[in-house]
Image (cartoon, rainbow, N blue to C red; front, side, top):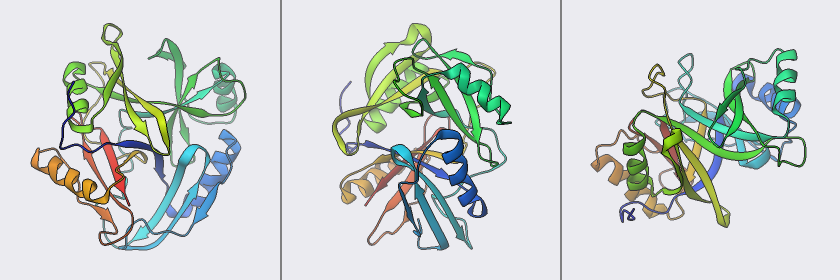
Length: 274
């Protein structure tokens, strides 16, 4: 696979979770209680100048809970609620999956059954807070303590061969391990703030009955472009390539800027810079 010169180096920068304004504090408490996470930082920060109010809370592993109010629809910072869950999964490794599953059931948290998945391991989805924000727990017996630890990101696609090529060409992802015979391919991007590290992204074959199409869910996997000029050039490149791409949100003159675009199956990908 060759590098597309129009695509800047992308760095996985963690996740943003869009939370309703009135539910922000309750959501922070939920993550503290049910994931055992701590508040790392809190800011009264507007993600877009068109917001009337904004606030962000950083939890563990660079996970930000973000809430805002505005009098108009924002180009990037929004979530379509009440639709189907996306085919994008933010996974967290845990030591004892069965015990966690049982505890969540006893606490009245909505969960799926435990099922097998990529990496010859087991998973279950759970829905966080009273908003029903879907996350995924992944079994990993090598984890040496209780808690939730970063794993890979899973993205469901209709045509695995075409998607591997598309992600390489338009995001610069490289193949880390190829398990097409088992229905998935592991790809990788660099990690922001960890020069020698990589984030892993699993492209997995969707079942025939799985729904697909654009879904703007509350969980946003965010990639970072280090040079601001490269960010704007990349946005133009995606539009010129006829890829469904949002307008740019944030602070166009100075400050954080973001946009998103969709892959061949409507999976949303998010890009930011400063």
